Length: 371
Image (cartoon, rainbow, N blue to C red; front, side):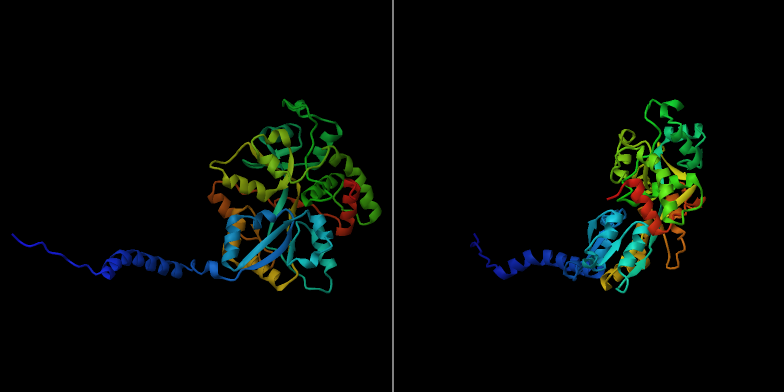
């Protein structure tokens, strides 16, 4: 009978046997992260950039845009405000850049910054459109105010639409179970650029030439005012109300930006053919300017113009990209076509020629009774 044997195990060896495998996994993972560049992210210095935004703030609030900017070492702190309020804000100098939606606010900001650091960047544009539902668009076709232009788009004749308003026509006059008058819902023209553009759309129904004097601007504004007032109390951004399932009860025709419609459609599993766009025959393209006041703002503007990932994300969010010389990029149509959406007729017709900034601002004061 053999005597029992006792083995003495070195505790250090037991520890190594337990520790080495997870250590190897950790080292391998660390190498992968270092190679991919992700491990250094939390330790990078991040520059916080403060900015005022009008309607295009949804671009900088997009999670992918945030991640791209963070990878470049920047975090943009968004302060939302209407374009007109933005242009008149007394503390502009406390921000690195601003991003108003249209030419009136753009010009006002730049005039206020005369003699100071001011660098404008124009990374993309988006048309202002009238969003509606298929049956209402077809009612306008029946009324002679619209024509179909593809699967999701219609051309709108503002002079004929004005006649419907003059005749106090209602939707049930064209076979719909809606007794409301035919009107357009828009944001407050005193605060939002899309609401101000509705004034410009109706102005085209009174003639193609924009007013050249204050007196002419005021006269035209008084003619346009009843058509804008017909909607009742103006709201805020109309897109959230239009895109909800019960959108018909909030706004039969809503003034929004084309990029909001395109982005909505791209999020759907299948194209929503019930929601469609009306394009006034004289279109208006909102070309927001990122107006930089500081070197940090300059850097964000340069990234917007040059960074491939940011520019691709802008297209994915429905914007038409612009180059340094103002030329339109070809990527928008190709991208949305690859996603099963027809390219909209942006720029296919004429464009609304808005009055000079100071005259248009006076028109808005009269129409909106701005304070």
